[in-house]
Length: 69
Image 1 (cartoon, helix red, strand yellow):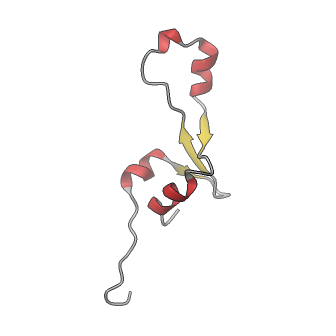
Image 2 (cartoon, rainbow, N blue to C red; image 1 turned 90 degrees about the vertical axis):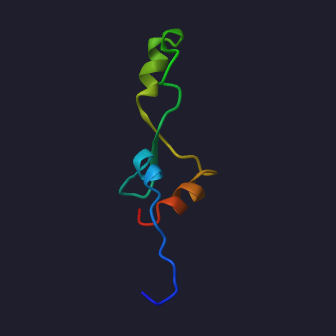
Image 3 (cartoon, rainbow, N blue to C red; image 1 turned 45 degrees about the vertical axis):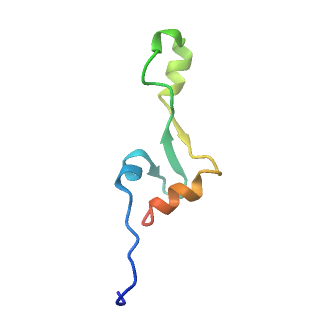
């Protein structure tokens, strides 16, 4: 590496929360599964178990923090 150039580092907090698929999509957990679960019906709780995709608006921010993904 050339002298004086900075190396981009992976944000470990971001790496723990997101997963990159083989095709380059970024997966995330769904929000809303932490508390107040008794007011949510079982179908809603079941769907919160699934993984979701990161929206197109948030992709640049997540990719910037995962430079090697």
